[in-house]
Length: 371
Image (cartoon, rainbow, N blue to C red; front, side, top):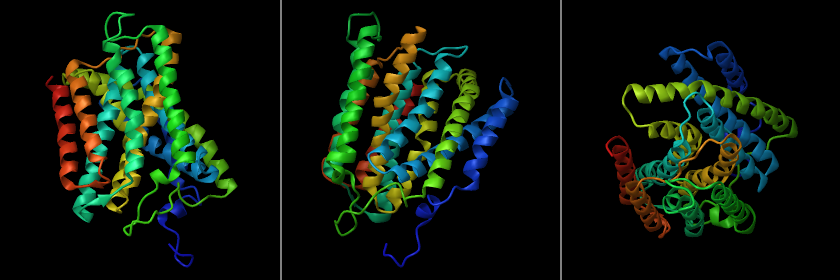
């Protein structure tokens, strides 16, 4: 865009605070105060809508603050905002009337399958339909996998093979070590992404030249300060609404005979919704690298930041965390990463690879209900 062109809608949105992002958190708090403790299905529907809208508002305010502070702090703020949302949903179940020891495992597993196959596959397919083949930076895509593979291995697979504690559980010492390892992996990746090798994650224009990226036009200090205050209020509303909504998820899953893992899938879907919408929009605009950054970056931040925080809560409260997935899911995870390595090993995404990812996603969903 040259200097004579009008700013894009995204850029303009970062120069002001949309009225809906102010009204939504206030409405969310009102819903929590007025309907908390209700058991009617209509109450659950209202809380669900309020929660999803509040999540979108929280991410919007985080993006405004991130655009103001710039990198590397902008990416950290976005990751922290999403982590607060995810932790709020998980902890509300762990400390609720019906604690679910498998919730962390189910949520992390769902996040991995959603970002590797659901979101990424959909982005590749819609991008290929509109633009045929799309290019992306090989180094950036592989950097996500380099970090994501060991994170998934130590959190979801390795607990099945340790002997310090029976079952798919870590001992307290092992849980602390794994949490620190995940956090260090995330910190190292963030440094590479935002400082050392930022060019690995910059979108390619159609002529092969790098396009500038960021969180949008840089807002003024007043807008950023207002958004920071609204972000805090909005995140508080998200956590409170999550506390009200999770019993409806559990009751709904039980009523239809769905497995407990559906609760984790719902949590992951709520958390990833804003990034998923943005990723699909970027793919339609022929910016697949941005889609990959959003999808795989969500997975890295989710595990790297959520596991340490939830581990602290579990150790503090004594709530056990069943982390190891089943042998069948372990095999499917390995297949998932083999496919991801093939897809992101060429620098070009085709319709066929996108379809394969979506089929693997459908396979996981089918086996979730028919193990």
